[in-house]
Image 1 (cartoon, one colour):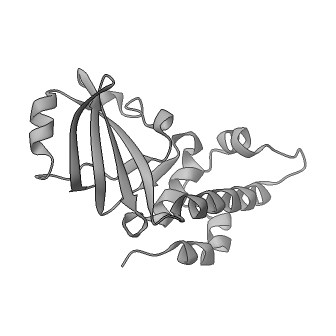
Image 2: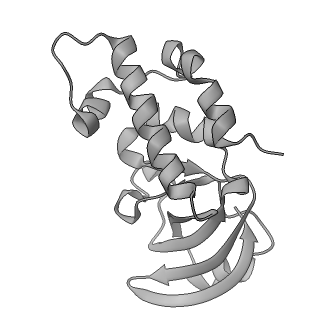
Amino acid sequence: MMPTLDDLAAEREAFIDNPGTDPDHDGICDEIGHDEDEDGRSLNARWFDHVLATFRKMARTGSITVHRRISVEDPDAFLSSIGNRPLGCSWSWDEESASCAYHPEANHEHEVLLTAQAPVTSVCWQDSMVQHFGHPHEREIVVEGMVREIVVTLEGRILARMEEAEA
């Protein structure tokens, strides 16, 4: 069973001292502001608390709407492959932050947007917190399990709707 948000909260002090990545303090300050006298540990603590509160708010309903943009060579071949392979674990809780730009070496001609419901039991909260420290602008949710109510969109046009698939 995946650790819960309460498990993540219990790791607060460890995350503040070592967030598992080099914190993007500039990005964090863009999100929550910065006091001139604030040291890195205090900023980490405020950011952890901010992100945890965001996660708790999103998780209240039992699932989170997540978005993943990927580039594909052939949209029809991609659609037929869903169910035969995982969709990927890196999703965003903010549609505007879902981007292919983070991996330009893998970009193909067509960019599809996947939107789905991720049950909170499919979310790896610890990895999601690490990603928020390293890349706050990505608003990443790491999903390691099933996603439901999947909508596949290409250039604003819905290509398919699916009940469930593995992230």
